[in-house]
Image 1 (cartoon, one colour):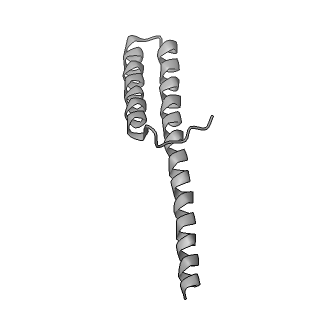
Image 2: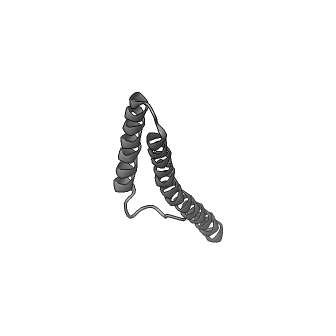
Length: 83
């Protein structure tokens, strides 16, 4: 009976470790995605020919930059960054 409970506990622990590892990687991927989107809007800002398009693109750059800063502060020391 004890060995069965120990094996179940070990399996739960291993699933928990795997889930933690995945979540830490997902945190890094989220930051990377936000940076990618910010870069896309920076490129659109540079390529925009109309002032309205530039203004909109600039607002989007600032929005994604805020997302990056917020998640970096929230995930600090918790995420795994893979390049």
